[in-house]
Image (cartoon, rainbow, N blue to C red; front, side):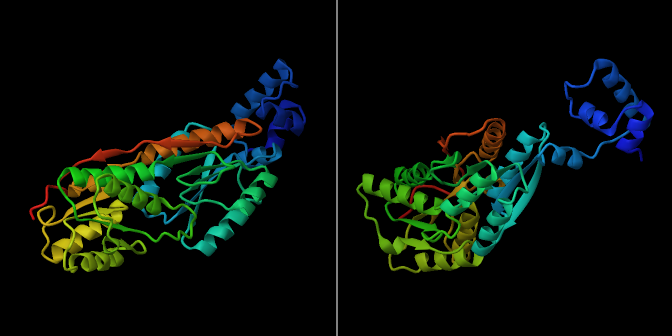
Length: 333
């Protein structure tokens, strides 16, 4: 395999001249440039992109940090990021987080100049972490995260929660429950809490009672969703409908309800949030949020941030839509 030294020797120039040709420097004459390029083609020389980038003080990599890589909503956002960066010189380095402690460790590591820019998906850095990135000169863009000093792309979760609940109210439901994740979010996002606020707002606007026993929170997972569903359906006056803060949880709620003999949507209407791919195959009514599009938009913003000295902080809110399928219907009792 040919090296840059071989190219320089064959072309009769110094290694520095070959490097300048590769970096498209204007300090090389056209005649010399043509001779070097001809030798590069003749020797089939393939420069080390890593070495070249490091010589320019950059890695040409964008870090993407995500929690729970296997979640469908996260994967949809990653697909949008990949689709946008595919045609650029930047490679993607993926960092995953499974625990709050690991989250802090990854943010510390990423601030040590391992990437040119960072996309943080569903993870919100704190003030100290943001300052580390600022000192390191690494621009950060948040997708489904919040910090007042960073540019961010978010979904209107509160509006989505209200949209889901109003759909159930319009069908005639009055006993409407909510299942979501704990208000204390160790990852600093709070999307479930916002969706619950939208749920309460819609009930209040409709003059319906906001019942504490109808609002249950638990960690994500099939077993927890089953337990919460059983608690709801064993109440003396069980709900006739439930808004679930994510499609993943909603699928488990449907399964648990049917195991208890509650036909969906006959005895219990179920609506989720996200509109992941599997939702359409099981007929889940849900609130669609633009997951793929949010990944695309976040990637566009990090590319912009890499081209300017400072990208001013702002919040871009993406809209949500109701997707009605087979899991919701008017109450039978």
